[in-house]
Length: 312
Image 1: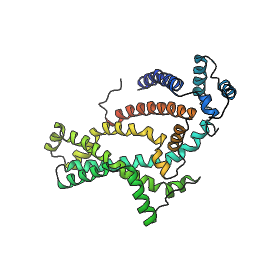
Image 2: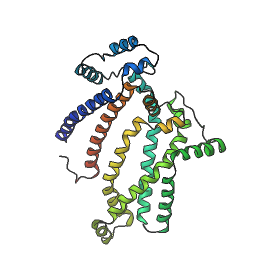
Image 3: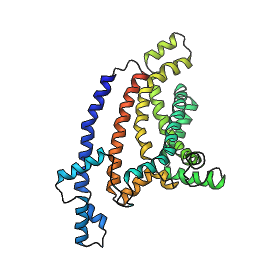
Image 4: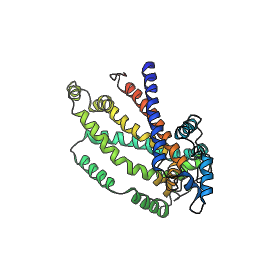
């Protein structure tokens, strides 16, 4: 296990180097002149040159690349061009809001979709199965914007169960007062595709010989499903969940914009609109590292879930 872990960590280095080079040269080639963007439309050529000198853009490319690498190694991403706020400080202040909303969505999606999918797979072909498949197909066909508009109208304006928008400095108040409505709507949207996907995983396992053998030995259907089918289907389920995990750190700009949540998703969306390169570059690198770490942890979890898996 230790050797495998070290090898995987070592393998992350060239991947991360590739991401850093890609981000640097992409922004260098296609991102436009940062000095002109910062100076604005009414700036003189002298003012643009002065900003270019301050940013070190007159230096050779390899020196600029080294400055960029040093920023990454020191976790010092510089300042946002739009707000002049430190990018590290911006992340630290926006991430809690994003996690307050996105973490419950991911947890509830998994906790609800897995048992429902297993229950539906167990009665495949029945009226219940067909009805649920029709409902999930219809739910999948509706845009998230419709859920937001109808949800705010129904749950906030008509029933008065939740506030439409708002956010405070208290995590507990946000979690219990302002987060429930966006979480509820996001789970309503997300559970349909997850349930259909997990149902297909379970049906694939139910068709295997070991399930027929377990039934022939007289094991109860409950034991067959929970002890054998669920366990063997957990690897593709874990893979699917791990693919969604980086999203909880970057947030959903739709949710954060519509519910006025000061999270990272809304900040990244505004950074893209404002061509705020330091923020976009930092998010790209930060997301790449998180994705690599999550992939590693997922591979380790495979071994825990299924001892037959060999880590090489």
